[in-house]
Image (cartoon, rainbow, N blue to C red):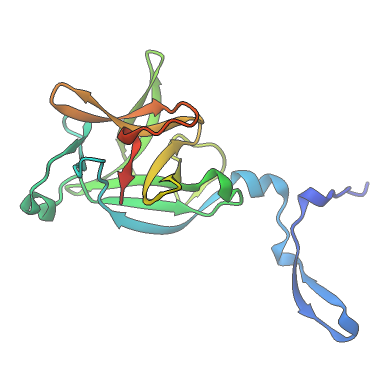
Length: 198
């Protein structure tokens, strides 16, 4: 039988205005709705350090299973173990949610990617050995939505976990450590522990 198409399913782009003002469409731009929403393709990679509100750098120590914001000297920053991040930006068809990104970091000759896992009923941020995929077919525990921190502070960002809305990357003090964690943001609240500068 014939396939019925609805207006939401197809996006068409006019590529040529012909004689008699006829529009010609390029059907290579037609994208089924289910692909539009779910499939993420890597678009670009940024190389950055991640700083918190106290100008401390996020440092990943896989051997200790710790990621925390620390005071770092210029010399330590040049050697850069576990603090120079690749921010993998993915194309999105829903820009209002924020730019989908994944994080990875090089420590020695190994690459680690950031992900979230539930452990004893709470969400934990982990770094696992491996590469970030070029394409993500659906939901993924490595994707965060990059949003400006506040409308008046557009140079800093907050990162919302894609699989649990309202949960953001943040730090919490644990002894002398400022550990990377996921934290719930109440509506209309501004939480400085979620503020990350790139």
